[in-house]
Length: 93
Image 1 (spheres, helix red, strand yellow):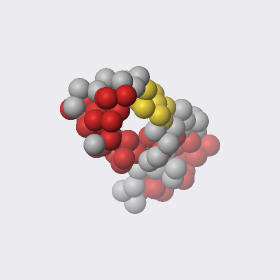
Image 2 (cartoon, rainbow, N blue to C red; image 1 turned 180 degrees about the vertical axis):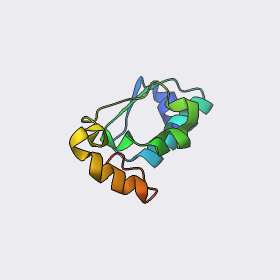
Image 3 (cartoon, rainbow, N blue to C red; image 1 turned 135 degrees about the horizontal axis):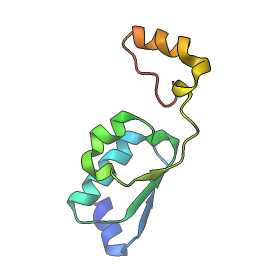
Image 4 (tube, rainbow, N blue to C red; image 1 turned 90 degrees about the vertical axis):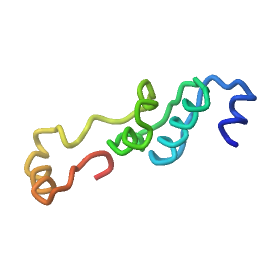
């Protein structure tokens, strides 16, 4: 119903203020229903699960996020501790 309302309103952009599971579902359903609006979100989309949920529909989604802390050499030892426990320290970790 939400996608249909957006189609009827002929929106150009979807600004997502929520979290990645909802964003993945919204953009996937939008594309399946022929809505080509650009999605823009924030740092909550910085997770591999967003792409897993939304699939190819997440290609081209825009979002802001600070530099990835897990890529900072100063954090290498901490990142390794997480990885040793089979946990990927991404996003808000």
